[in-house]
Length: 107
Image (cartoon, rainbow, N blue to C red; front, top):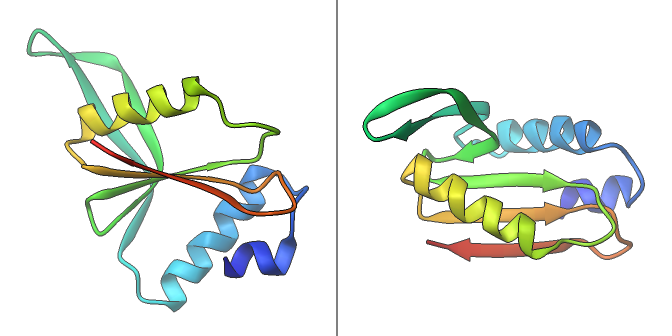
């Protein structure tokens, strides 16, 4: 909320991500930014991997969006990310609207 209150809507995703990283550090929230997760197929690691915008406390995936509307594809993508990461909670935060849009997904 702090980042949205400060910037409002209309900035690029990377601006919000950088500001979120500052908020996490100042709030002593343990996080990793751009954390890669391996994807396996039949026990073989694929060259393609998933890179989370943020992983907080090693168990919450946070994806930042700046789009007009979240779609079912965004939710499906998060579920797949939760599968490969073994995380159980995903948050999608969309800064594109005048009101901050957040979606929580439990897997």
